[in-house]
Image (tube, rainbow, N blue to C red):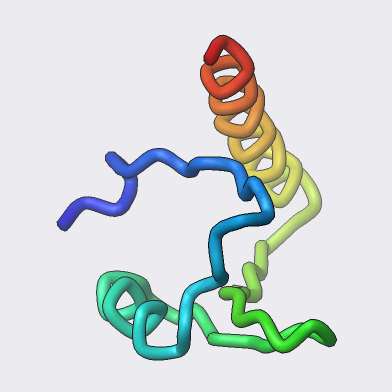
Length: 78
């Protein structure tokens, strides 16, 4: 499975969050991600990213922002 080929569908509120078991099915494809639980008892993933300098961290943030912008445009066209 190539997770980067999957597309996120924004939550509508009527879809239950993943269980720990469902997350585990995808977690095996990821490196250094942790399962967390929020105050509403919903599970989510987190990862700590460390960079050797500020410039490298900004490059990463901008790449993530570009992915989000593209995804937002695609989702808003439906």
